[in-house]
Length: 174
Image 1 (cartoon, rainbow, N blue to C red):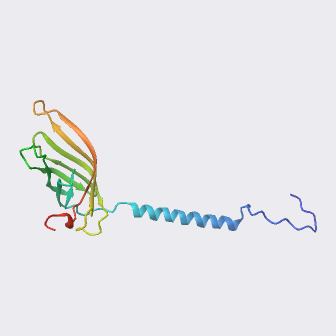
Image 2 (cartoon, helix red, strand yellow; image 1 turned 90 degrees about the vertical axis):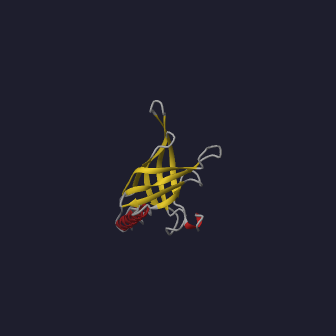
Image 3 (tube, one colour; image 1 turned 90 degrees about the horizontal axis):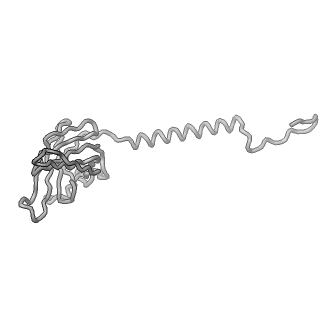
């Protein structure tokens, strides 16, 4: 564009990229980056120090009880049996269990050719205090392993699960 002497330069277009607009854009980008980093930090799982609790297992009547002793897990799973079974409840002991930071693994003993293996993550649930339902959650893969008594061959069924801790108000003893 050519300007003649004595003519004023045309006003800058509102779409032109000026140094002041560049500074504004940089400030906006910095603010967005800070917000994204802040949100990621909030979403990251903080380590769960102790997962000792009773959890709902595969049904409301079944219970997973875990005692976390500095990462070594002890406990049991109580599974309610159908009415036509001779046992009311089968109690599977945790025979091998560990927690490393938020990673949890355990395996139970075998009863009637069946045992359980779990591998997953511990995290805080929606409960605010330890006595609240769903204060802790264990989410991951539960393997239901059936062993053929004659051949010793294992049949494995994998189920994606989230075990939620049982709150004090959900327990019969209150």
